[in-house]
Length: 159
Image 1: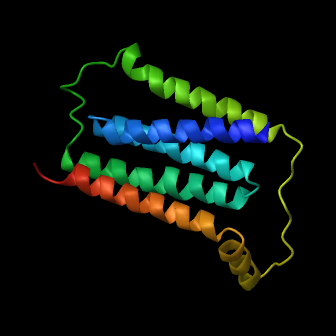
Image 2: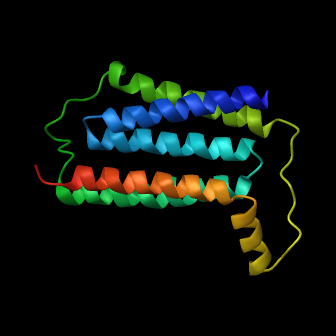
């Protein structure tokens, strides 16, 4: 069951990332990028790394996306008054991806697997655990942040 959820979330993450990259409207691209972040958080949760999943949601899906929205609003890239109300064709991919993530996370939360317990209470033990056991996850998240910054620079440049 865990492998099936992993592949479903990985597919959602790749599709959402491709839609974020190819999206013409910057706000839609940010919504797809947030969807990608939530799918990656679900993958980390399935890999028994709840701390990294929590970091992914709080830091990237929360703080970084607020920063991107601020940049878009500051540079006036959105123009919501000149746009038309999106139809079902524009909403459908986001709704499908969100529903798949929600169902996958509910199935993962209901599974009997439990997260491993850490033994240390101090900062040194936490850092050793974080960069020792979850070092690859931290590197993946840092690359994702790098791609997000490059995307923000691309959206923010003057044409």
